[in-house]
Structure formats: C-alpha cells, structure tokens
Image (cartoon, rainbow, N blue to C red; front, side):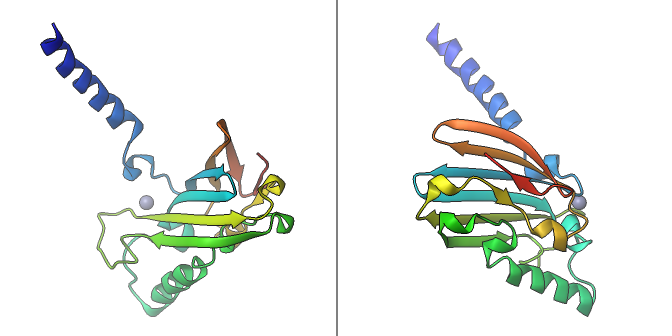
Length: 171
Ligand SMILES: [Zn+2]
C-alpha cells in the first residue's frame, strides 16, 4: 500500500506547493505590492515586492536619459530602507541590510512586466516600541496604491492592506 500512497502524497504536496508559491508574475498587479514583515527578537525583517510600473511608470529597460536617471535614483534611494519604511524613532533600529533586486537593474530585457524585490533587515534596541510603521515611498511614487501586508511576531500573524491614502500599519 505504501508504494502507492507515497507518490500520491508527493503529487499532492507538489500541487499544494505550486498553489501557495505562485510566481511573482501571477500576483503582478499594477499599483499593488506585497510586504512580509516579521519581528524575531530584536531583528525586524521585511520582503517587499512591487511592480516596477508603480515605482517608475515603466517596466522595460530605460529608453532615454530621463528613464535611466529615474531608475538609478530609485536604486540609490533604496540603499536606505527608511526610504520605504519608517520606524518609530524610540525603537532605535539600525539597518543591517537592504537589497534591491530587479531584472531591470540587471539590464535584463523582460517580457513585459517587471517587479522590484526588496529585502531589508533592522536590529532594534527597543523592539517592543515598534508599534507603528509608516510607508513614505507612497508619496514619492504616486502610482503605488496599496500594499498587502503580512505581519508575524512571536507566532502571531496579522494581515492588513495599507493604502496610499493612509500609509501606516499598527501591529
Ligand atoms: Zn506590469
């Protein structure tokens, strides 16, 4: 019996995995991004995905100097994660890491759509004071309309939609 059950399980798990791990293009919706934010001990970690269209107004490789400048400026701004997310000053967080990736940054010609994949990490002296997050990037990138946010801390999970009209989240 086991010989037939194991492959069935494998097929089922594969199917499940395919459903839960849909590739970025399947979720790509202009103006809308997602953010996974988690606090573990004193480390705040985030993964942000956003259509490049929402950030730059285009998703192809730059075609002129203005587009090149805009893309370079975005990359430069993202070196500092506070460009994206604002933490309460009293939580005293220091950025450990900020990594911005996109096909466009690598000069790869895409097939129509392109995303920003952004990872960041902070170490906080007072993580208990992380009571509110703000998202200043909405102001600089007016095509950005919303973020689907998943928050995890101490085994507690919370989902929220942050909109450009009220760009804050309180866990
Ligand atoms: Zn697109």
